[in-house]
Length: 148
Length: 435
Image (cartoon, rainbow over all chains, first blue to last red; front, side):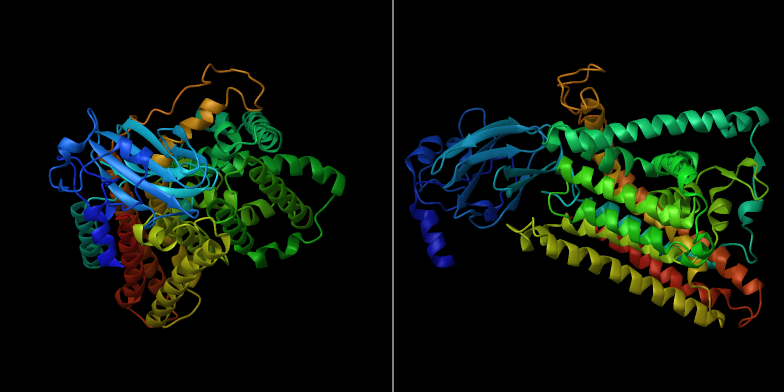
């Protein structure tokens, strides 16, 4: 499936995970979800814009986007560890096919996500460490943010 | 969810340079120590130490001091138990999981390292037993206690580690309450059979506190006097009880398991099934088994090199510092950060809307210590523990050699296996912290 996946990245008008110009770019954090109106409205980088110059595609005041898709009760691609620069403004985008609550541990911030919807959670990464983002009811770890 | 019952922040992976430096120091120091340290046994165990000022010793040992402290600790324990069973059902609003897993279990390490075997003095189970014993009379099986050694303590520590690191819903207050209740009942029944001496051998918390307490600068001399002493003397005075190695192996193995579950590799492998208690249980036991095999092999070879048997438990005490180093490295930040939660929730332990200490609604302050300091403490704890263990093992080998009865003049050959065991444990400890 790798070929198909790459094609999907190139053609879909949605790249949920972008790293900021100053952050480390980790190719494994690129999600390839199916396009949805809600998510596309939040992040709409054009497919032709390469990830190398993502600064123009970031919403104002946001340094890094971290996206996760939950399908059939699992995180697509598994829960990864994403590098985050301490002090940067991070926006989490969680697309889920089940209704639940997205919980950013330690920072103790939560946001509800509707079934089939996308939740957005923006925060400043002031606390260092490896922090879990969890789908609370399901007890599913979505992503770990390595903030340093 | 992390393996540890509460808290969802893990320390950053250690910087590779720091790990390399620590690993190199541990290795080099090991062989330098072998060549450069003293040539005949020096540590004097429980004979060493200078007495504390008489007034201070009297105050510390006064029955009223002990009685008051015990009453306070019994009261606090009952509050925690009550909160666990009847307080807010959610972990984040209930003091019990935080008090048990962080303040008590992790806090026991610095408390014992600084003040000595505090839990032997404060153990609320002893306080309850003192009352129970009046009804039940003399313990029928007290005579068999020496034969059990520290094995029951090792088992109870393993049970607690399972609860803390692998059990399903281990962070839920009601589970914590049931565990505490079950633990107390089992311990009290055992004490009725084996007498008050049971707790020093069968209550894992007291066993751990007593072992750590030997590394404190204050201790009790063989003649009963409270003394300032060299922690090395204190540790070397630990009797080679049966099962001492089992206790140390359980402590190191279970902390290592906690480290394993924080690595990327484990998390990738377990993704989506983090709640699977069976796999966690098996992995926990596997970690303990690996350390057990390693230690038995090392101590066995050491005995062989010395040309005599019966040395396994005599080397076990030299691994206590390593167990302590692992504990500090793994739980130092948890204690400083999430440990604040206990204090925050203490204002309203039963979820009644109280605010006894004005801490309700306070957030944990994550700025009390920096990421860099945490990394440094972790490496220093593991490498420092290695050095202490090394010196202890060195002296023990000389002592065994000086007793004769084995192959003469072989303390160096006899030390080598244990030295390698320590290097392996120290390097593994550092590797696990690379995340």
